[in-house]
Amino acid sequence: MSLLPAFDDLPSFKGLPGCAWDVWPANDELGTVNLLTEEVVKNAAQEEIRSPMFHRKTPEVTQSLKIPEVLTLRDDDIHFNSQSGTQWDGMKHFGILREGVYYKGIPADSLPLGRHPIPDPLNIDPKLSQLGIQNWAKHGICGRGVLLDLVRFYTDGGKELSYDPFEAHAIGVADLEACAKKQGVEFRQGDILLLRVGFINRYNTTTNEVRTELGSKNETFAGIDNTDDMKRFICLWGMPIGEFFDLEDLAEYSKETGRYTFYFSSWPMNV
Image (cartoon, rainbow, N blue to C red; front, top):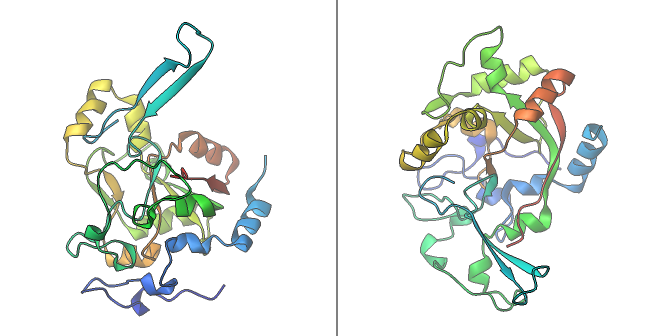
């Protein structure tokens, strides 16, 4: 694979530096998932395989009988908002607000809203499927995963975590690089980066009342900072962002084994 352009060599988009849209073909809907080539996935497999919140509807299940009075024939109708658990933010989840566009400059007002019945799954309106998560589902998100355990990095030596994961706290590039160095990790093109910043542990160990209150607060939590240095570090626009990954057991395993790289495989829902 040819080397990708440096962040500072990328063109700007209406004053926003580092627009990588033209790195990929004009009709591309994968973004940096393009980096997960057969070679990248193969190498990762060979090297690494060893032994309800935020004003969204909570999940609910409707269980019904296929035939009245026959209790052994059931169907489940499951409703959940894809933002209520572990999930990938799709290409049309969060665009450039001030310009009203998504990836590749696709106008937000050109994409339909509302509920759309799909009686024929083999004949879907292209406007409905444009920038859809099904593109990543068909490709898969597999490769070498890299865990940066920032909680352990910050609390090494018995120190207290200096921030509340439920409150705004910016983590800079210097800390990411220092954490990687301490763990003995060297990054490669196509790595899938997972950051443990403490949200899941805080969520799992607090009361249900506190968890419920999260739904009415501003969505400001601990995470990476929004600077040009961070953009240079993570680069390219069109990059999948995953949320609510439970990394607690993985972090413990990495501590015990000293291994912070692994084979990562995720298949988004093909919808």
